[in-house]
Amino acid sequence: MERPANKIIDLASQFPEISLTIKAADLIDMVNYCVSKTRQELEQQITDANTETYPSKQQVMKILGVSEPTLSRWNKSGYLMRVTVGGTRRYRMSDIQRILGVTQKSGFDSRTAGNK
Image (cartoon, rainbow, N blue to C red; front, side, top):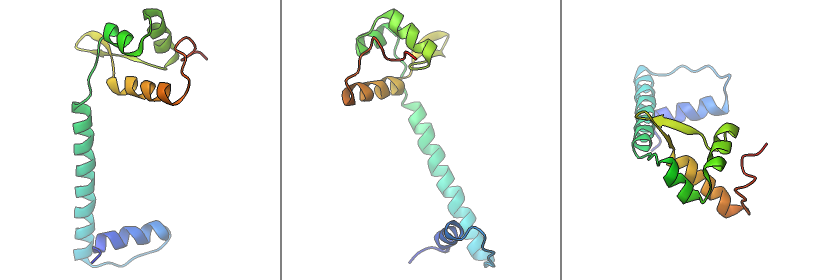
């Protein structure tokens, strides 16, 4: 059986201009549903943030097979931005994985990547 909170959300999505009269118990159920869903999303974001790694410039150069000037150019163009972690310059592994995904899907050329 579908929960009242789901029905209310479905109605609001389908008919955004509708006015509803609902039971207090259904309102409480919907609030609890929204809080629970938000909590799950925040917990997932925290988990994702905690699993992020930050390799050094030398490690990134090796992973991507590029030179130091290429990393500098990519940082200036916004293609692969540096971040400061504990006072040292690092790169987000998620950004590197994004680039690796691009390289595998399209004939990537590191000499022209990030050039505008």
